[in-house]
Length: 223
Image (cartoon, rainbow, N blue to C red; front, side, top):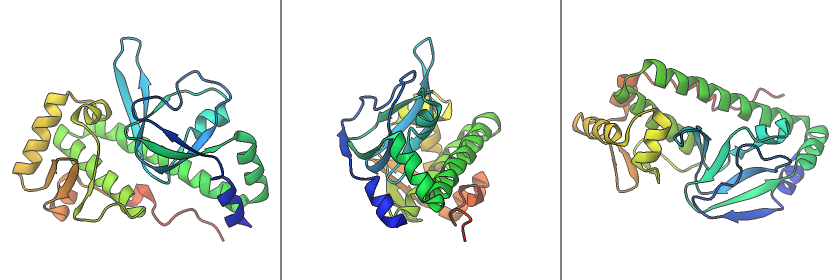
């Protein structure tokens, strides 16, 4: 039954072009989405026109769940690449939660993991220096992509530009370029031509003290 209900959430498949918001702050009565392919970012736009990217979403992630439950979107969601996503109406979501508590627990787990990542990103910006911040981010992204079969300890494809990295990590694009060059010269990681290559995976983990436990890849606790 749970598998059938999960499949039903994918009935409304939509395609979105890059660089056009799927959801924008202040919208009401919006749907949530399950990302099937492509990359998106969640961001807040400041009055002066600058933005802070809160996170990047990859295939398998829920998009806009908080916006649906809060009734009003509190952030923007923009495709970085062309994406395909399954549209989930709030009523469908509530009915699924009522019929399949295990699925509700799985969504709660996903939301809790997202919160844990936001906490870690706060630590990144507040306490890690620029090189550690970049290293930690690239390792976290790799761990998430590995879970859905899109990465290994050797590396992964990544469409993020230095400007996107700057908006996510609280750095300037020039600083991002310098940090990536230093990490490459240190023999840790190379990010060029849309691919992250871990030249010394274990060394990079040790350098930024990366502990993947906050990502809880074992999944929700359910009997």
